[in-house]
Image 1: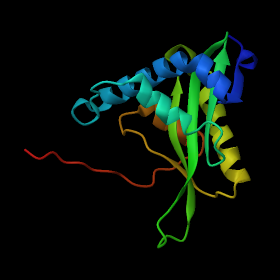
Image 2: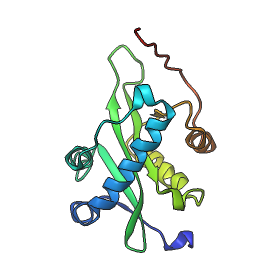
Image 3: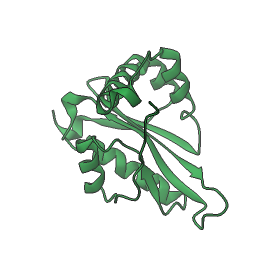
Length: 165
């Protein structure tokens, strides 16, 4: 596979409808991988097609939320979703970029796709006057953390959780 053979494009209505099952499979993989990081907290019950469809539809034809996909051999092999969110009034920085989803098919990882997706998100944020952006991931997502750091992300805070017994 040659990186130049991968088509990166914004998710539009037609591509979404044609490629929904690819997106659904990638999303299933995303949530199954994530649930493995902490089965008690992130355990998955059921993922319905409508849940994924509703999520992605909010990114199609929306100026404040974007989804981009990577296509290879007429199959969607990855996606990124991101948006601009408004911070509470007491923060000096009023708007911040948020990368809310990033998934690349396991067979196509470590080929520059995730890096390209992140650069696309950063360019969108830059073009919209956003100076800062964030991503939430599990502390156990070592590959993801490595990618994010390679792309210039820095650790900002840690979320701790407890369990009522």
